Image 1: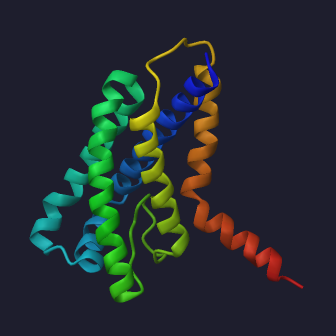
Image 2 (image 1 turned 120 degrees about the vertical axis):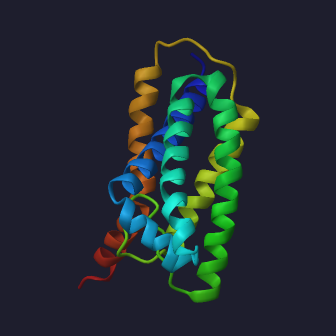
Length: 175
């Protein structure tokens, strides 16, 4: 397995895990997610009732397709990239317009979106685009468990980016 293939597998697994975590987080707190769509994104309450489970199901299906194989990952990540671009544009618009917006990206509903969350979205968009443009075809499977493990770490870092930076900043500011 080449370094490029290892990197491509790691990115694909991380993107699939991010989609799975997003679906799981929203699905577990579906009522809260539905309410957040209505309050933060001004989706009419009647539309939020069907839109919330549709988003969760879509993310779950895209996660499974992304994790399943390179062949199914290409169309899944292309669809995810399109949806994520639309979502990120709406999120940035609401963030700039109102200053405080809750996203509930991974199930959290109390914390407002921060600049670090927007940075995370930008990194995810870049990873999706880079994978679609540069990923080599499927290679050997010898190092795939290591790529999967690396992807888990990357996923945890991306999901927790806001909290990690907040902790580091607090340590920096502590006397």
